[in-house]
Length: 249
Image (cartoon, rainbow, N blue to C red; front, top):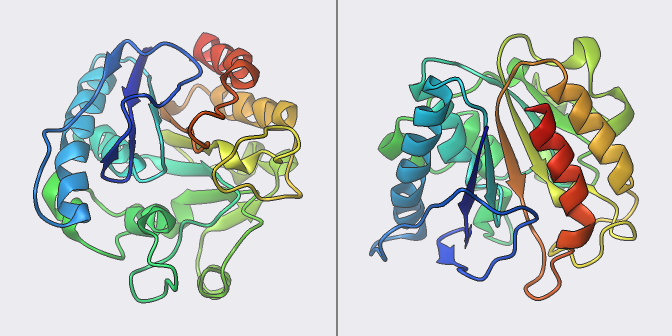
């Protein structure tokens, strides 16, 4: 087990981003030019190399970052190690937008769709990210979906479920990338979130569900999106949960 930190929100470096546990290594990219996708591709190339090195040594990395797009580098790294993982994606949001469907233009609303091989191809081409089949993806407690995401899910093979139903036969077979965006937690249980979404599970319920997935012994990497407001990071609340995850890896 290795704890890696990627203190970025999209292509913006946040060196003071607070994490619930101390990382063993912190990843950063040289200030680059070009589009945001090109700058993120450079960063995620580094993430992919580091994750691949850990997985090849039979270590399960925990990759902490300030968004969900870092998952592109994590999954590419698992693939470089010779593993084609399925995905278990805990998130209050779908992250299934494309440049054509989004109304906000927010790039952080697109990474799961990009892992499926759609959307802007810049990152995938740069880091050799291979598409994950829809049938190998489980989306957990995505309760705040935009209309284009609802339409997409209605015709896709992605499985959706609530927190209580995440384990068992619903999980993809084989190795897994387990992604946890902390905004899946109800904001009354975890204040300070950047994109709070009411009506979700308590922190304890999320912790139990994640541990159930970890208990399969098939998680190749765990991604933790620390999507909280600057200066309001609830690290003391989250730390015991993350320490439990590390003990299970």
